Image (cartoon, rainbow, N blue to C red):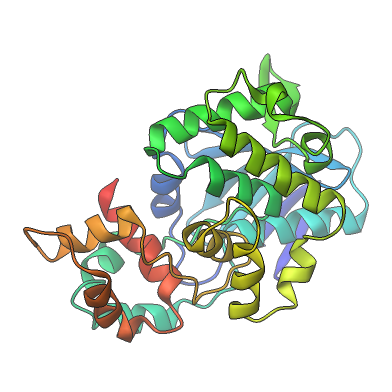
Length: 303
């Protein structure tokens, strides 16, 4: 991680193959996002790690430097807190990943060539917090994206904390400790199914008891991590792969049954029907070790 600090402003050196506009295009795809705000290409967001809750503004200069300014801290943080925030941003934008091999593969691939050129510089935008990633995976099951964002907003505004700045509230995703103490009745005002409420509370309780954590999953190989997630009530192969892709950063994660992925392949190939799972497996052979990036770029085609 290459970064330095000048007058309480962090400057992160960006990798090659990074384009902020491509990433902002993804981050602004839904107006109802409640976890950050984007105005004039500047992201304002609370970064919450343990007891750190820091409101930051993130902007980029010439796709070479990311500038991180602190809005709610009158005194400079300890060095380790600064490092934790830089690590979070690196994870969020997948900055430690060299995408050169991905682009070499994609430019020679009949399906990925167009998305790789069109969205050049896009990273798999992560969800570094495991509980948030799992909740988002569960909330998004079997409903359209717009409704999923509505549910997320209701959930966050009902149970999350916020930091107020310039007359606006910036939200922090609810902690698993808080959700673990609730019952489905407490979530009744949110327009999600009782089953989804049960799943989310169940996940929160597993995390509160220490049976489930990002640290444990990180020690496992892909298959072990996938298996241990699928064992959890409410998490099937799609949600498990979604979380492994966006939170654990496992590049072989591949939500092959994803409706968006299927529709995107149909669009790129001008098919008059949806591709079968066998066809997708065949088409994805060249994507080996880059399945998560292939999926993310193909999703982008649909927005």
